[in-house]
Every structure is written in C-alpha cells, then in structure tokens.
Length: 101
View (cartoon, rainbow, N blue to C red):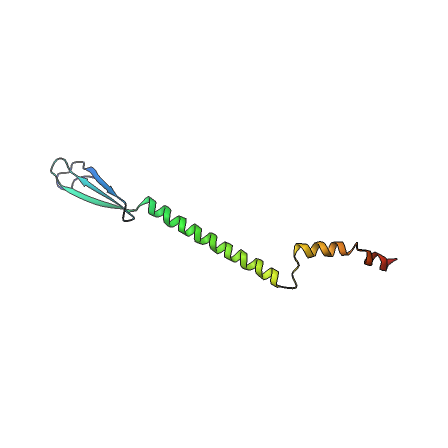
C-alpha cells in the first residue's frame, strides 16, 4: 500500500481475520502515518460457508432419498427386489409345472 501523505511504500503491521473479513493495517516508516484496508471475506470464512452449504445439500439429498425409499416400500403396486425374485421363481414352481402336465 502506498502512503497517502508521503507516497512511500507502507509496511503491513497487522492482518486480522477474526471478524470473518480480511483487514490489514499498514504503517509508513517515513512519516508515521497508519492506514488500513479491508480485502473482503477471510479465506477461513469462505471455506466455512462452503462446508455448511455442502453439508446442507448432502442432508437434503439424504432426506429426499429416504422419503423416496419409504414411498416405494409403502406403495403396494411397486415390487421390491425380493418380490421380483419370487415372481421369477414362481414360473418354475411345482404347482405351475403340475398345471401344465
């Protein structure tokens, strides 16, 4: 950062991200002027927000998948894998073969 008073290069004296914002303080060695700038959100805040959004999306997907599975198990017209096997083996059952003889 350039000093507003003497146009010299300022040195960074402090970097604070505890508020969730990237705030940097500078001091000019030539005239003693101090200044600060805010560079936007802190990296940890961005990563934390992203993680929360990801967890919420995963929870939502799990909730939707769970409700779809419950709906399938409650609907009598839908067949599960077990009943599909039962219907397949019913073709070869003894009663069915006896009826064809």
